[in-house]
Image (spheres, rainbow, N blue to C red):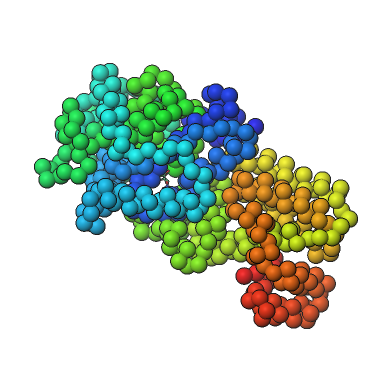
Length: 482
Ligand code: AMP
Ligand code: ZN
């Protein structure tokens, strides 16, 4: 049984979907005005772990992730210009070309990260009629008014506006005022009011402009997510995901519009990840402290290294990014791959099958207990490492039999259904990856090192380097190899 922290309830809750084993889930997708950075991918990876945990529990998932290709202003509230229009001006392209270009890169990175593809990835620009219908419905119910820059939602009409962030109105106002960097929309009745439709600014503006009965313009960012989630997942659905930056504005406003239209609760569980930081500051394009997956691959890292690093912290805690930390992670991942290859090579009978099987089962239970407890990946990983080191210890002294190794491999692959590191490939293709002779030497060197025959260990190390180009390092975290 999965327990999740629900931002709306402000506590952990048992997860109970609306209908049986079916889970309907929505993620606010990327704004495709530049390459998504690994901070953005921390959000999509946290959601991927959530999906994998649900799949492991036997749920069937319908996951919708939108592509924001219009309407997201530089400030998340009512501030500045549309991010994609700005990028188009800078790159001398049309907004559509910019959006298509970065969407392609995003989809490629999703694949490289082994993120399970959502069932649907609707584009905002393909859903303008749905947005206009929602706006019409809000207008009929008199939630809207006209201001200088667009059609606005009157947040004072809702008694429970802001229930997601639990900020008082005064605090929310202070938060919004602090965020004013570019301009303040004029004619607003309340500082929390937001645009559902924005008027075309200049006659010359022709890209990403639509006709509507409120005049030519383009939709507000929040109405996009309401329109697409309600269309594909129904008036009330199970889980809505995003980073914590979206709690006070974007998600609060999605709730306001959707519940004003349907009169029903919009979402049962709100799932929010904390930030990936650099030197304690949120990783963000505006702060110029971003890395993309492509940047890190150019430095020689593998997508699985970055994936491991991004999932290794608890999703509700901040995670600080450094290249040194990623280097360590990269070694850890390689160590796990090597371990999987070694498991395939083990042929002996071994003598610890029954007692060892108990340990394996305890590690497996511990791992999934941690995952089901609000996706505690760091705790789950420590169970996995315990199993790896126990099995390694036995293999070095020759007490890990082929049957034991098979059992460990099975459990490791079960862990990997959550972790998504591609362990199966390394297990199945063991012989192709590292020659058996090299494997034997690695084991022999480890055994020599353990029995303090350092000279012998060093000569094997040299042999590995010379014959196979494999470098062995002894670090405080154990043996690493490249
Ligand atoms: P955006 O394209 O700005 O809408 O962001 C896409 C997703 O990434 C949203 O769920 C954001 O909350 C999330 N996000 C943005 N920056 C970070 C960060 N530094 N760490 C974690 N999540 C982030
Ligand atoms: Zn959204």
